[in-house]
Each structure stands twice: as C-alpha cells, then as structure tokens.
Image 1 (cartoon, chains in turn orange, blue):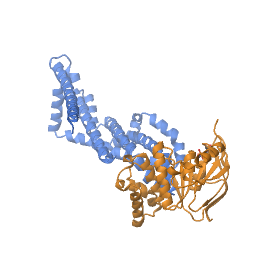
Image 2 (cartoon, rainbow over the protein chains, first blue to last red):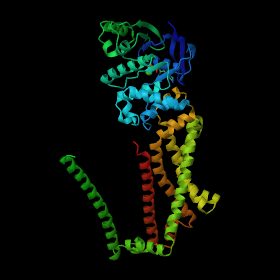
Image 3 (spheres, rainbow over the protein chains, first blue to last red):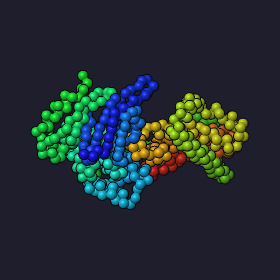
Length: 247
Length: 262
Ligand SMILES: Nc1ncnc2c1ncn2[C@@H]1O[C@H](COP(=O)(O)OP(=O)(O)O)[C@@H](O)[C@H]1O
Ligand SMILES: [Mg+2]
C-alpha cells in the first residue's frame, strides 16, 4: 500500500508563562490513500494539537512529517461560518484567500453544493440553515480547495444526536465519493468505529499511541448501517477499556 | 391572515398611536404649564423665559439671518470632528490589533486619557491653536477619538478564535484576516461607536464654542448667559437638542441601511 502521509515520532511542547506543557510525546502514523482513521483519547490529551500541526497552524517541536505533496483540509470543531457572507461566498473563502478563484473552481463549488442538497441556499445566509446543513457547508468550504486529506476535529460535537448520525452519514458519503482520506478526532467511540477502518487510542497527556484497532465489520456500508454490525459492540468495549477515563 | 392575527396587529398599532399621543400630550402639558406660570407671574420669566419668548427669539434670529448660520457652523464642526475622530480611531485600532506589543505599551496611557475629562484640555488647545474653528474641531476630535479607539479595538478582539484559525488554515496573511474577517465582523460594533461618537463630538464642539465664543449654537448660549438674556440661552439649548436628535437619527438611518441584510 502506498502511504500519502508519514508521521514519525511527532512531539509538541507548548510554552506558557506558568509552565511547559508536553502535549504530544510520541506520535507516529502512516496514512494510506483513501483511508479513514479516527483518533480517540481523553480530553486534553493532545488530539487537536496533532491536527493543528498537520494543518500547519502550529509548529512541531520534533519529529518528521512527510506529506508526499498532499494538501490538507482542516475542518474545525465549530462550523465558523461567516454570518455576513452567503453560503456560496463562505464556501469560496479559501479559494479567494489563496488567490485561486477561477470560474471553473466556482462551478465546482456550486456543483458540490447542489450535489449535497444545498442548491437552494447558495445565496442564503448561514443563519437560515440548520446545524447539520451548516456542517455540510463547512465541509464543502474545506473541500473547495481540493484537499487530499481531511482533518476533522470533533466535527459534529456541537450537534444533537439525530443530526450527528445523519451528518456523519453525509460526510462519509461525500468523502468516499470525492475520494478523500480522513483523519478524524472524536470522543464518540461509536462514531469512530462506524466511520473509520482504523481507530487509534491515545494515552492521556503527554500523548502517545496506546493501541491501534483495525476495524473490519461484516457488511461494511454506511455509518448508520455499520452500527448494526455484529462486531460493533465488541470493538466498542475493547476501545472503551483502552481509553484512560478520568476518575 | 387569520382574524386573530388582524386583531393582534390592530392592537399593536393602537398601542403605538396611544404612546405617541401621550408623548405629545406630555410635551404640550409641560410647555403649557411653563407658559401659564410665566404669564401669571408664578415664575419670573426674566430668569426662566417662556415658550413664547423662546419662539420669538428663534424667529428674530431667523429674521436677522443668523439662525441657520449658527446651526450650520455647529453642524459643520461636529461632522468634521466626527469624521476625523472616526478615521483616526479606526486607523489606530488597526495598528493596535496589528502590533499587540504597541497595544500593551500604550495600554496605561489610554486608561489615563480615557478617564481624563477632556474638557480640561480645552484651554491648552485654545492657547496652542488660537481662538478659532481649528481649536473647536480639534476638541471635538480629541473627545471622541479615545473612546473610538478603545471601542473599535475591543470589537476587533472579540473575533471568534475559531474563525481566525480557519483563516490561518487557508494560509491567510494579516491583511486578509483584517479585510475578510476583522472588519466585517466588527460592523455592528462600528455602528455603535458611530452613534456614541456623534454625541461625544457635539459635546466637544459646544465646549469649544463656549471657549472660542465667535459663532455657533454654543456661542449663542454663552453669549446669552453673559448678557443675561435667558431667552437666548434657552433657545440655544432647544436648537441644540433638535440638532442632536437630527444627527442621531441620521446615524441610525445609515446604520439601518448598512446592516439591513441580517
Ligand atoms: N496554544 C497553547 N498553549 C499552551 N498550551 C496549550 C495550547 N494548546 C493546547 N495546549 C495544551 O495542550 C494540551 C493538549 O491540548 P489539545 O490538543 O487541545 O487536547 P485535545 O484536543 O485532545 O482535547 C492541553 O493540556 C492544553 O492545555
Ligand atoms: Mg480538542
């Protein structure tokens, strides 16, 4: 299998006035093309830090990252839509900033919006959209710059359970259809198992890899259906046991 | 539209009319009592004037052709001071946002300047710039600019950190973050500052006109008090309230047009 991303012994130390925080002690990951990987671990263990480093928002302290010319698309914890821009303009933001906006790319973004049920809302403002739709807009805004690897940081945590199930199904389909790879941070074990083929359990801070699970479900299909697979509860229990729960 | 909804709307409309009615009634009542008390000699109209005398004074100002000149001078000074204050305010706020260390260095100075009653600077400005319109406009600007800077800068800092993160994840530079995010995000705050500042500027201008004492509504009030013409003083105050209301309404109107989208 050819890897599109190689992370070796990543380390990150934060410095603040009060203290020095080792957020990530040792993290390595090889991502195959088209692979969906989930990172789970106790809160504050350094998951967001890993994604921030991968997307270039933070400098790494040590370790190597080999990108193989792959572009990262970062989807944040909140949708962070600009209320004063229309849905379309929100989605074009990345292209405008990078100075890459062409008619062709605009058409591509419009086609994505139409394809994923937002065709009637191109000129609406974010306040008119439901939480799930806003997340879809945020995803398309990320997809607009045609990234190869999506980094998602607890992307659905602000939504209620029903919308979460629906949007995780949507996102799964969109990413598979657009042939993207995914590194997703989540605290929802069920979400991790149902969407990803690999789940990495991280220790509490400073974070290292505690255990990796390769998920193989019979009749692997969509996230919602996957939750019914007979192996599901087994994986759930195993992963749950590995996570350092705060007592 | 259902019948209930019609009744509901009518009720709201009636309520609104009633409120307006009461507002006018109160005005007439106050003016009436004032006039009545002056006519009957209950109050001394030499020191408390009366509505009819105020009206006569304004008419005579109009007849002598100076009424609109004074109003215009005050308006002009206020608007000029206002624009200068706002422009400088935005400019300095951007600099503070751009260079956080500059903001840190200047922080105590702003605190002092902000709590200092700017009136105290009036005489100094008068000596430096002379007793002319320059001083008045400078005073108006000075009184508004500090508040403008602090307000706008605070608005800039209120931006959601996730949105900044988003911009950075697209490799946005500082200019882009400023124009795509900080400015549009502060629109509401800017409008609030406009409203606040128009009244600040008016304070500055009147203060300046008191000191310079050449023309304008502030001059009318000052002059009136010096020659013990209370009719003129109160006429000036009435004109000033009208001007303040008009300026505020204009700003509110601009705000409505500008933020109508959401
Ligand atoms: N910018 C920063 N400066 C200092 N410490 C930070 C910073 N960002 C995160 N940290 C610290 O690093 C640790 C890991 O944070 P984070 O990656 O956000 O955890 P997670 O996403 O797993 O909840 C936390 O202890 C947090 O307090
Ligand atoms: Mg996090």
